[in-house]
Image 1: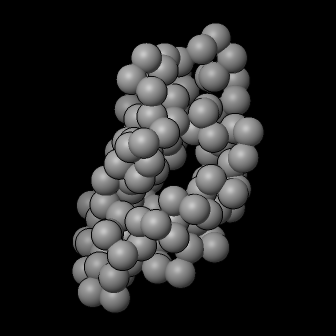
Image 2: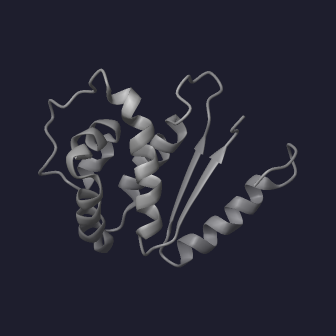
Amino acid sequence: VSGFSGSGKSMLVNCLSDKVNAVGGYVMKHKFDVLCLCPLSGVISAFNKLCLMIKGGDRPVIAKKLMEEFGADFSLLIRLLPNVSVLFPELVNPAMRMEAGDAMNARSVSFTLLRFMRAVTSPVMLFLDDIQ
């Protein structure tokens, strides 16, 4: 959605959000910070919020699919998205910390997440505001 300031973009997104929520979908919203140096921070932040929104019945299915999709990169996913612990409390080590190469791999993880979300059966809407 693009347009001039005050043209109703956020109102349109809010209307669509109601429809997505009504059918059991997930709506992720994030407003970009112009001072942030990581261009994918908004995508990562939105997916981190999604981990908290995933409903009980979908949890086991989504958790299994995430594990299959990420395979060896699963520990990186947990370090980038701390809220993944909601889906996998038994796999999260409290001592896990970001490592030196994690920032470089964030791009790969972000695109894998986007590809993964296309396969989820519930509708998912991602709204990134103020991308400039």
